[in-house]
Length: 226
Image (tube, rainbow, N blue to C red; front, top):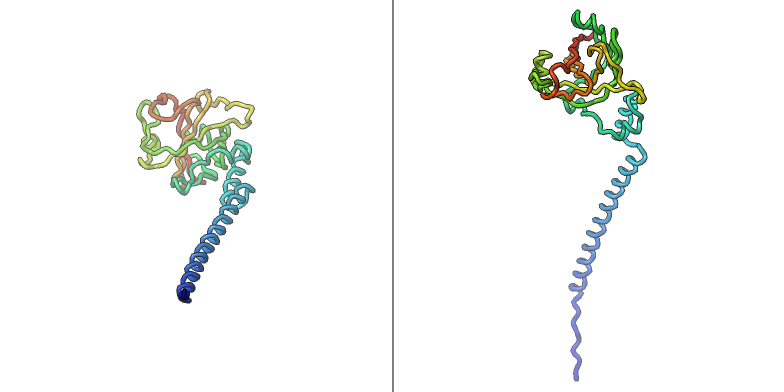
């Protein structure tokens, strides 16, 4: 019997090795990219966990500013959902001193200063507040169907900032106010237009809207920038 030699082609073996090398290179590239992405994810998680990084820093700074006015502790402030961002809503950041714009305002409350969550009235008490929501100018605020735009001589698309009045100390209750006829104030509505501010105060336990009692509004006061 005569054995027939098998002809091994060198080109075939080389092609197989090249294919394996290409596959292995692709797998290595995928693993490398996954490793980078995992490191970025771990770094981001570490920043949140350790309280570092610009985003976390902004949240903590905001919470500290509110805490400085005595609203809540830092842990509670950071846990609570933040108020709408001023840039996103178009509402100007309200701060500084404003003088009474008419005799009625001058006689009842005098000038006003806005410092963070604190509203200081010259001739009346100071109110501590916390964010509630943003209302539109054409929104009805009481059962008599009156809108913010009509009450404040504002545009229908004006944005009114609603704030809840809160106690100065956690162990205390909000005090009754002469501004509300001796009853307890509950909500402040603020419209800030460049150098002007209009302020409305509603009695406590009032859900500002079309179902609110027509006499829930304590009054309207108007101010201009100093």
